[in-house]
Image (cartoon, rainbow, N blue to C red; front, side, top):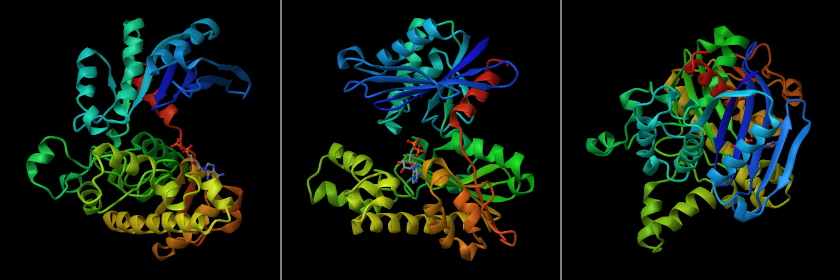
Length: 390
Ligand code: ADP
């Protein structure tokens, strides 16, 4: 049985899934090495939910992503019966040029390293497992799938910031992210409601990272994310859209270092910063602290504002789609957001919403509301299979 390994590497965790190729891509197992360098733990489950591995390691044995990748590789060689024929990687940044996934070779890898300054917190983590596989199995085809590619068809007007042009040339552009999720959801919409998929759609990817994407006839035309994954909506720990004057104030008046500002905006802000309680919407919904309620009010308010902006970019709206952790699992948050969209013609069906059905708007809703589960890993597996000629 030929299989594809999909790798999604973050700063302290390495997530992976294995797909069988024959007879259409089929998920065989999913796993995660958490707590790299602190409390490493490898957990693997089969597609039936059966626990295949649950093992702790010493921090010294898993100090970084390459060592995590080696342990996962060793587990697969020993326990996985399939024959691995390719590895697909999630890579956050494909820069201005990669508008499609790409087969990795030395040249591509050095190209992707050029984008590290554009995504210093993510890109090095994404590239480390690629290098680890290259070192051990240079013969194994590897494919990089980018969070930015789906947005590369944006117009020049959309892609620009209003700063002198030479910055655009050196890469200071609005890239947009979460593209693998949007591409998957857009594809699902084609199956579920082709007439809608060809219209004007906003997809709301609401997880620990959050953004909205305006999709017209299946193509992304706007995103709330820009140069980095900090823009747009407030997120679990990220600030979202902020007046650049605030950054100047922090640097000049408060004497903060760039590193401190980075930490503040990426890790101490968003729902966590506003509430002082948690970055997790489940905790905030359950908390009695008024700051938790305030953080959620702010989140919903900003989603409403940005949805309006994206509807303007689309020239109207045929459907609004909820996806990712919050979007897929929280009827309460969906209801609050849907209430903000009523002026755009949406009418929520409370019962369908409570049941988490695919279509959650009423039959007479002018603009439909959907809940679609995203699957970035399957998207990566599909791209990988295509590029290795499957
Ligand atoms: P990521 O893949 O970006 O880490 P997910 O898409 O898994 O994020 O989303 C994680 C977030 O989803 C959690 O932080 C939590 O706030 C939210 N979430 C998950 N389940 C629920 C739920 N039942 N109710 C509300 N929020 C939820």
